[in-house]
Length: 246
Figure: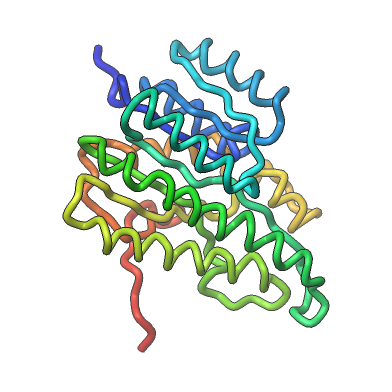
Protein backbone atom coordinates (compact mmCIF):
# COMPACT_ATOMS: atom_id res chain seq x y z
CA UNK A 1 0.00 0.00 0.00
CA UNK A 2 1.34 3.42 -0.99
CA UNK A 3 1.27 5.90 1.86
CA UNK A 4 -0.47 9.22 1.03
CA UNK A 5 2.64 11.33 1.73
CA UNK A 6 5.30 8.89 0.54
CA UNK A 7 8.44 10.73 -0.67
CA UNK A 8 7.10 14.11 0.52
CA UNK A 9 9.40 16.45 2.46
CA UNK A 10 7.70 18.06 5.47
CA UNK A 11 9.16 20.77 7.71
CA UNK A 12 7.56 21.10 11.16
CA UNK A 13 8.46 23.84 13.65
CA UNK A 14 8.03 23.36 17.38
CA UNK A 15 8.38 19.64 16.70
CA UNK A 16 9.73 18.55 20.07
CA UNK A 17 6.46 18.46 22.01
CA UNK A 18 2.71 19.03 21.96
CA UNK A 19 0.94 19.61 18.67
CA UNK A 20 4.22 19.91 16.76
CA UNK A 21 5.48 16.53 17.90
CA UNK A 22 2.12 14.91 17.22
CA UNK A 23 1.97 16.45 13.74
CA UNK A 24 5.52 15.36 12.92
CA UNK A 25 4.65 11.78 13.89
CA UNK A 26 1.36 11.84 11.98
CA UNK A 27 3.16 13.06 8.85
CA UNK A 28 5.80 10.38 9.33
CA UNK A 29 3.16 7.66 9.61
CA UNK A 30 1.69 8.99 6.35
CA UNK A 31 5.07 8.45 4.69
CA UNK A 32 6.70 11.90 4.80
CA UNK A 33 10.33 12.56 5.60
CA UNK A 34 10.11 15.01 8.50
CA UNK A 35 12.46 17.96 8.94
CA UNK A 36 11.91 18.53 12.65
CA UNK A 37 12.77 21.99 14.02
CA UNK A 38 12.92 22.75 17.74
CA UNK A 39 15.28 24.17 20.35
CA UNK A 40 15.62 21.06 22.53
CA UNK A 41 18.11 18.50 21.20
CA UNK A 42 17.11 15.72 23.62
CA UNK A 43 13.43 16.00 22.73
CA UNK A 44 14.29 16.00 19.01
CA UNK A 45 16.28 12.81 19.48
CA UNK A 46 13.30 11.20 21.22
CA UNK A 47 11.12 12.28 18.30
CA UNK A 48 13.60 10.73 15.88
CA UNK A 49 13.27 7.40 17.69
CA UNK A 50 9.48 7.62 17.42
CA UNK A 51 9.61 8.54 13.72
CA UNK A 52 11.86 5.56 13.00
CA UNK A 53 9.51 3.31 14.96
CA UNK A 54 6.73 4.60 12.71
CA UNK A 55 8.71 3.42 9.68
CA UNK A 56 9.87 6.81 8.42
CA UNK A 57 12.90 9.09 8.68
CA UNK A 58 13.66 12.54 10.06
CA UNK A 59 16.21 15.29 9.80
CA UNK A 60 16.73 16.98 13.17
CA UNK A 61 17.29 20.75 13.18
CA UNK A 62 18.06 22.27 16.60
CA UNK A 63 17.14 25.91 15.97
CA UNK A 64 15.72 28.84 17.89
CA UNK A 65 13.29 30.45 15.43
CA UNK A 66 14.44 33.89 16.56
CA UNK A 67 17.68 33.01 14.76
CA UNK A 68 16.36 34.39 11.49
CA UNK A 69 19.63 33.85 9.66
CA UNK A 70 19.38 30.23 10.80
CA UNK A 71 15.99 29.97 9.07
CA UNK A 72 17.61 31.21 5.86
CA UNK A 73 20.41 28.67 6.21
CA UNK A 74 17.86 25.90 6.73
CA UNK A 75 15.98 26.86 3.57
CA UNK A 76 19.24 26.96 1.62
CA UNK A 77 20.12 23.48 2.89
CA UNK A 78 16.71 22.16 1.86
CA UNK A 79 17.13 23.68 -1.57
CA UNK A 80 20.56 22.12 -1.95
CA UNK A 81 19.44 18.68 -0.80
CA UNK A 82 15.93 18.39 -2.22
CA UNK A 83 15.32 21.39 -4.48
CA UNK A 84 11.85 21.73 -3.02
CA UNK A 85 9.66 21.62 0.08
CA UNK A 86 6.33 19.80 -0.09
CA UNK A 87 4.87 20.61 3.33
CA UNK A 88 5.48 23.46 5.79
CA UNK A 89 3.88 23.36 9.25
CA UNK A 90 4.25 26.63 11.17
CA UNK A 91 3.42 25.36 14.62
CA UNK A 92 5.94 26.89 17.03
CA UNK A 93 4.53 29.62 19.23
CA UNK A 94 4.53 31.06 22.73
CA UNK A 95 1.71 32.29 24.94
CA UNK A 96 3.32 35.35 26.45
CA UNK A 97 1.87 37.18 29.45
CA UNK A 98 -1.86 37.10 30.18
CA UNK A 99 -2.14 40.64 31.39
CA UNK A 100 -3.75 44.02 30.68
CA UNK A 101 -1.97 45.68 27.75
CA UNK A 102 -0.65 48.48 29.93
CA UNK A 103 0.98 45.90 32.20
CA UNK A 104 2.71 43.93 29.44
CA UNK A 105 6.48 44.53 29.54
CA UNK A 106 7.74 45.68 26.12
CA UNK A 107 10.34 42.91 26.11
CA UNK A 108 7.61 40.27 26.52
CA UNK A 109 5.53 41.85 23.74
CA UNK A 110 8.52 41.88 21.42
CA UNK A 111 9.30 38.24 22.24
CA UNK A 112 5.77 37.07 21.40
CA UNK A 113 5.84 38.94 18.09
CA UNK A 114 9.33 37.65 17.30
CA UNK A 115 8.33 34.00 17.73
CA UNK A 116 4.69 34.01 16.65
CA UNK A 117 4.79 36.52 13.79
CA UNK A 118 8.24 37.46 12.54
CA UNK A 119 9.59 33.90 12.62
CA UNK A 120 6.64 32.73 10.52
CA UNK A 121 7.18 35.59 8.08
CA UNK A 122 10.84 34.60 7.84
CA UNK A 123 9.87 30.96 7.30
CA UNK A 124 7.57 31.90 4.45
CA UNK A 125 10.04 34.39 3.01
CA UNK A 126 12.65 31.64 2.93
CA UNK A 127 10.42 28.74 1.90
CA UNK A 128 7.71 29.97 -0.49
CA UNK A 129 10.06 29.43 -3.43
CA UNK A 130 10.71 25.87 -2.24
CA UNK A 131 6.97 25.25 -1.91
CA UNK A 132 6.45 26.56 -5.43
CA UNK A 133 9.09 24.10 -6.65
CA UNK A 134 6.94 21.22 -5.34
CA UNK A 135 4.22 19.79 -7.52
CA UNK A 136 1.80 20.47 -4.63
CA UNK A 137 3.31 22.66 -1.92
CA UNK A 138 1.15 22.74 1.19
CA UNK A 139 1.52 25.03 4.21
CA UNK A 140 -0.44 25.06 7.48
CA UNK A 141 -0.01 27.66 10.21
CA UNK A 142 -1.49 27.43 13.67
CA UNK A 143 -3.97 30.10 14.69
CA UNK A 144 -6.44 30.49 17.56
CA UNK A 145 -10.01 31.53 18.17
CA UNK A 146 -8.75 34.32 20.43
CA UNK A 147 -7.47 36.10 17.32
CA UNK A 148 -11.08 37.15 16.64
CA UNK A 149 -12.45 37.53 20.15
CA UNK A 150 -10.48 40.51 21.50
CA UNK A 151 -10.58 38.78 24.89
CA UNK A 152 -9.35 40.79 27.86
CA UNK A 153 -5.79 40.02 29.03
CA UNK A 154 -4.89 37.94 25.97
CA UNK A 155 -3.53 40.88 23.96
CA UNK A 156 -0.03 39.75 22.90
CA UNK A 157 -1.05 36.22 21.93
CA UNK A 158 -4.31 37.28 20.26
CA UNK A 159 -2.68 40.05 18.26
CA UNK A 160 0.07 37.70 17.11
CA UNK A 161 -2.41 35.09 15.91
CA UNK A 162 -4.49 37.71 14.11
CA UNK A 163 -1.30 38.69 12.32
CA UNK A 164 -0.68 35.05 11.37
CA UNK A 165 -4.18 34.85 9.89
CA UNK A 166 -3.52 37.86 7.65
CA UNK A 167 -0.08 36.53 6.76
CA UNK A 168 -1.66 33.26 5.60
CA UNK A 169 -4.32 35.06 3.57
CA UNK A 170 -1.74 37.36 1.99
CA UNK A 171 0.53 34.51 0.89
CA UNK A 172 -2.52 32.59 -0.37
CA UNK A 173 -3.45 35.55 -2.58
CA UNK A 174 0.12 35.81 -3.84
CA UNK A 175 0.39 32.11 -4.70
CA UNK A 176 -3.12 31.35 -5.97
CA UNK A 177 -1.82 30.64 -9.49
CA UNK A 178 0.96 28.34 -8.28
CA UNK A 179 1.01 24.78 -6.86
CA UNK A 180 1.00 26.25 -3.33
CA UNK A 181 -2.00 26.02 -0.99
CA UNK A 182 -1.71 27.63 2.44
CA UNK A 183 -4.25 27.62 5.27
CA UNK A 184 -4.56 28.38 8.96
CA UNK A 185 -5.57 25.71 11.46
CA UNK A 186 -7.54 26.52 14.61
CA UNK A 187 -7.28 23.55 16.99
CA UNK A 188 -9.53 24.70 19.83
CA UNK A 189 -8.62 23.57 23.33
CA UNK A 190 -5.80 21.02 23.28
CA UNK A 191 -4.05 19.31 26.18
CA UNK A 192 -0.67 21.02 25.85
CA UNK A 193 1.73 22.74 28.21
CA UNK A 194 0.57 26.09 26.83
CA UNK A 195 -3.06 25.37 27.72
CA UNK A 196 -2.05 24.23 31.19
CA UNK A 197 -0.24 27.53 31.67
CA UNK A 198 -3.23 29.56 30.49
CA UNK A 199 -5.78 27.54 32.50
CA UNK A 200 -3.95 25.93 35.44
CA UNK A 201 -7.10 24.41 36.90
CA UNK A 202 -8.28 22.77 33.70
CA UNK A 203 -8.37 18.97 33.47
CA UNK A 204 -6.41 18.31 30.28
CA UNK A 205 -8.13 14.95 29.93
CA UNK A 206 -11.36 16.82 29.08
CA UNK A 207 -9.98 18.51 25.95
CA UNK A 208 -8.57 17.33 22.62
CA UNK A 209 -5.27 15.46 22.62
CA UNK A 210 -2.28 16.65 20.58
CA UNK A 211 -2.39 13.32 18.70
CA UNK A 212 -5.92 14.06 17.47
CA UNK A 213 -4.76 17.44 16.17
CA UNK A 214 -1.75 15.95 14.39
CA UNK A 215 -3.99 13.42 12.68
CA UNK A 216 -6.37 16.21 11.60
CA UNK A 217 -3.58 18.31 10.08
CA UNK A 218 -2.38 15.54 7.74
CA UNK A 219 -5.35 15.84 5.32
CA UNK A 220 -4.56 19.54 4.86
CA UNK A 221 -1.13 18.51 3.56
CA UNK A 222 -2.35 16.21 0.80
CA UNK A 223 -1.84 17.17 -2.85
CA UNK A 224 -5.61 16.86 -3.31
CA UNK A 225 -6.32 19.91 -1.10
CA UNK A 226 -7.67 22.82 -3.15
CA UNK A 227 -8.61 25.29 -0.40
CA UNK A 228 -6.22 28.18 0.18
CA UNK A 229 -6.40 31.27 2.34
CA UNK A 230 -8.92 29.58 4.63
CA UNK A 231 -8.99 28.49 8.26
CA UNK A 232 -9.72 24.91 9.21
CA UNK A 233 -11.66 24.78 12.46
CA UNK A 234 -11.09 21.62 14.48
CA UNK A 235 -14.19 22.43 16.51
CA UNK A 236 -16.42 22.62 13.44
CA UNK A 237 -14.34 20.10 11.45
CA UNK A 238 -14.46 22.13 8.26
CA UNK A 239 -12.79 24.95 6.37
CA UNK A 240 -14.07 28.42 7.22
CA UNK A 241 -13.75 31.44 4.99
CA UNK A 242 -12.29 34.56 6.56
CA UNK A 243 -15.10 37.11 6.51
CA UNK A 244 -14.69 40.89 6.36
CA UNK A 245 -16.34 42.91 9.14
CA UNK A 246 -19.92 43.99 8.46
